[in-house]
Image (cartoon, rainbow, N blue to C red; front, side, top):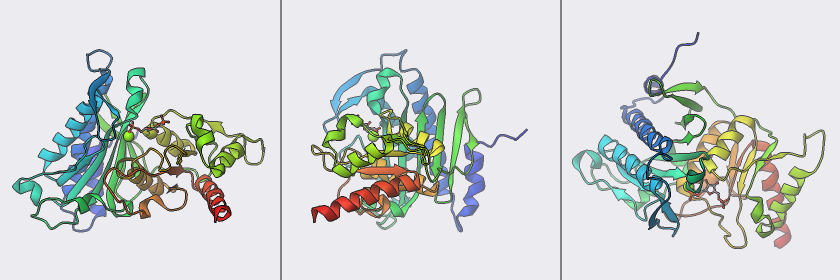
Length: 339
Ligand code: AHM
Ligand code: MG
């Protein structure tokens, strides 16, 4: 029988991947693991306590915040603020980033950005939700307060990223740029245990995920691609299967394991799509690329895009390499026609 490897043991073992590592990143990842357990505990008892439903406040994008959003946001902020490994943090739920002003934090090397509870419209109906995080080395000088440039870095500069999925089981999946590993929470011992070592996404998949209710407001290339996915062809195993949970983490996680593409394109109403570059697109792009897949805004690699502002949105096409390449080439042809 294979012996159990816990998240903390794994992180410590892998510290050797980083020459001259001081252990700060390892400790930060461990702190996130603890916050994930706290959020998981709250998510699991959501139906039993008066914590379901809307908080009555709106976040910076004017969206209704759920009570669990607020709880998760606080759990993550507390974990990283007192852990002392980051000099600042930014969350999808807050308009501004926070620079932690104390002696230990000012000397810290990293900043973190997170979406504390993604897919929150699914909470009340018991459908999988997730937490997403992205970690960068700070640009500002050690000893100073963190500033906005620390948070406006390209995805290619990420040193680590990950997500937690609160599904039929709870899993934490992360990368530090040396492959992707997944850990399943074993509730009887309260530990994340290595369950999905060196995850790889199939280069070709048979699942496409898009909110098809929006299809008529998408570009012709996206419509053409979806029609292609639906057309019959034995050789390429079409028609593909449509799967859309409406929870980004859950949709990407499934496609990562089975092979597939998730798309949230621009629409006539929202040309930049819906998803946030720094809290959703970048961290998932890092993971999917590390697993051998691709992530694009349709024209450019997600991780090469310079974010202009903290809550910037971007179209997202992410998943199996060949599937993303196909939609990219259709979008490129469409661009040529327009010119
Ligand atoms: P959220 O961060 O406010 O939860 O929004 C992001 C979510 C994603 O999880 C999901 O893929 C998408 O929004 C669904 O949007 P839509 O309902 O427009 O299809
Ligand atoms: Mg989100």
